[in-house]
Image (cartoon, rainbow, N blue to C red; front, side):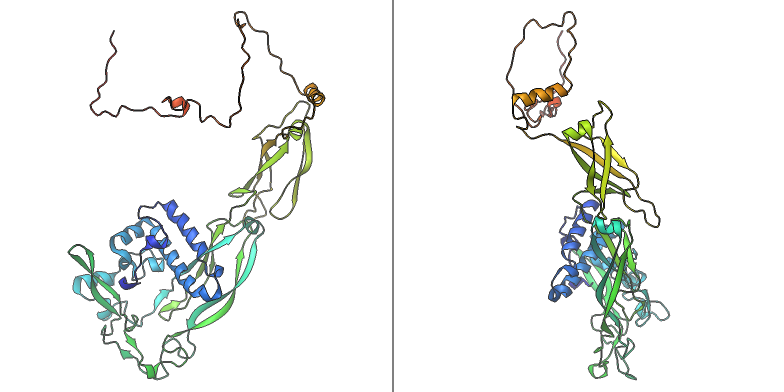
Length: 429
């Protein structure tokens, strides 16, 4: 990305420059999912693909402390030679350093690397978010999708020119493939930077129109459609990456194409919570079941099975709210094994609706069955001399308890004396 094309990475993710790593990651997931090429109409996919790549690039840089610091200081110029864009994590390369020292770069020095036409290493990967349900992570998933990527033109073998045609040396960069220019970095301050030549696209040479390959028109690559298969093993987790090796765009200057990398994003589930290989869910029971036990299907598992449990309460045993039942081996699958985690059911007791006792006779029947309070006889000196019968109201919380009193036991905080000149005083005897 050249300085002319440079955009603010913080604006790409819609975050402030002081955003934390957690805020960056959250913003990235939100932006990536809303701009995924597969979620827009066909005629908008090319634009969405460009925006999606910008979002991934912004996250790769801003989520890394070292890269973020370099970006904050120098902008995208710090990564133009295969740094953050290539996921290498490298700082400014030797060509940039030499350009600042001598006004040139390795492109003009015979015998050194980085010369136009020389093959680079493997192409940069393409990172994409892939949203999956907990059901799909439990059972595993195989999906096929159509991919359109750039491949070397089979007519000119990636040269961009006709057979036997000779490329013309670029006059703009004198065959170096790069240009040196000044960029302001502050009031009255500039820095010298090396950028790819815009005339020859960094190649150092080009073909005139009459000598360009008829098939690719000098672009050196053509579009190829291919059906790819993505396999998500059972038990996969949030954030795991699945690599489709060599399926990214092919660049003639790379020795081999990069990879397509899918990062799994686990959707929230309305019933289950997940931690590692364990699952947790709420088990709602009636008051009658809490007192007497039950034998029934308590939930539908992620693979569609009903999970049934039998609870036999010994005489007098009561199941209470927040009690936890652990079911071994009914959690998530553990990858590359036949084992599974555990399922934890947290009990909640549903009390009857108001008015379920229709008359006083029904009230007496329930009272006869349930245990009654048996207060002990008051100890000597504890018998109240007077008893008041008082009215009451039911409230939802303790928000009013100690409100506006300044007492921290009521939820307030101690208030310090804000007078700067206040001095501590000793109590007089």
